[in-house]
Length: 82
Image (cartoon, rainbow, N blue to C red; front, side, top):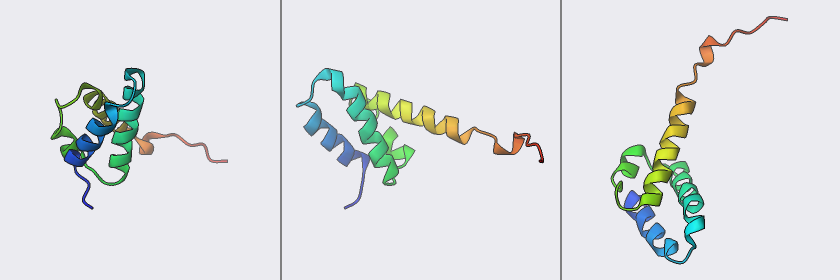
């Protein structure tokens, strides 16, 4: 089965109607992470932007976390030789 943002949106729409609002942010974050870990790329996530506020927020959080990891400059660390 091919993972697409449309599939993630379908899953979200199905499960989100049965969960309390207080859980939606956490579940949306986990769903975005699961789909990302399985290979869904940023362009796919962007294709569903505007469909659901909770998913938009989760995508933004994921993008920010990913950018923080990518921006780290491992070469600039000063190491002491023992």
